[in-house]
Length: 75
Image 1 (tube, rainbow, N blue to C red):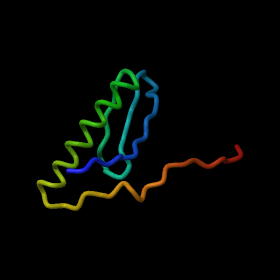
Image 2: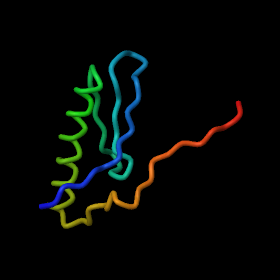
Image 3: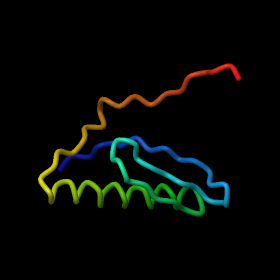
């Protein structure tokens, strides 16, 4: 088994803590009271999502082609 780096989106929650998701795995999200906890939780969530994909015979998305960036927009 090889290791892959999956992109995630980490956002502060308005009620405290953090919400974290993996955009290339729809429905794969978690949360945590701290950044560290949120990162640990999303890792577990990603592993579970990948296991479900494998078990159901679905293709696992390749994260290598994903580019994470930002753009500047005038407000």
